[in-house]
Amino acid sequence: MTGLRATLAAARAVAGFQLARLCTPARLGLAALGMLFPAVVLLAIRRSTTGPLERSFGAVVLYALVPEAVCMLGLLMTMCPAVADELERGTWVHVATRPGGRRALVLGTFIAAVTWTTAVGLGAVLLAVLAGGMTDPWGLIAMFAALVVLSCVGRAALFALPAVVLPSRALVASVGVAVVVEYLAGFLPAVINQATVSLRLRSLLVHWMGWRQRMPPQLRLIVDPQPVWVQCAAVVVLAIVFLTVAIMILERRQFPPSEEG
Image 1 (cartoon, one colour):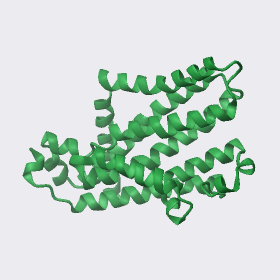
Image 2: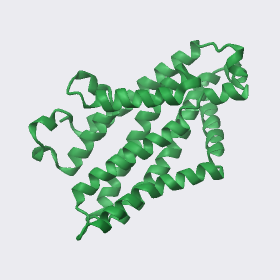
Image 3: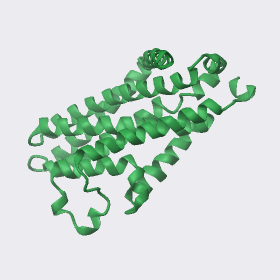
Image 4: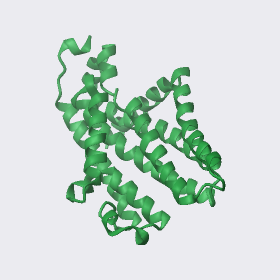
């Protein structure tokens, strides 16, 4: 228990440090752009139509813009450099020699990435729903808030793997993982898509919007009929598995001095 408490305390310290590093004018400017972009898109769509924005169409656009695009970009910016930053600054040796340092680095960066990206995603949802002028806005905000949290938790853990396996190419590797695993495998009507976050998010959207009974049989193959708690639990389990594997890999990795310089 003492070791666990020490690791959690170190992870909190890493998370605080990482969040402080994200609060720079440049990063805050990017966060503001991430919040405003979906609202601008929905406002432009609303202005181009003669009547109010249709709720189902607005939900599809908002899902593509926030839980998928904004959250994905935010996590690529915050989770991918977890190990690469330590190597570039020459501080990896201090992380590696501290008891629990590697675990704390992964967990702390994960916490910071989820916290930062969730805040940006929630702000984007709030502004976009209000700009879209859709019916039952607070219901949509609550639904997409849950989708944003699940997207950040699952995909931050997923991006921890390329961050520790290929730290110098983590961004490129993470984009490849997102395309191949989340978007290609996630749309395959096979067992492999059960291990993707995208299937869970898509299934929750369909369930909460009440679309399943109206979907063509072919499209029902790319959603999961299990109840909400199963979808949420699946994301949590996937996150735990991804983080555990990432920590196990990093605990055994040794980086040559050339990577630390």
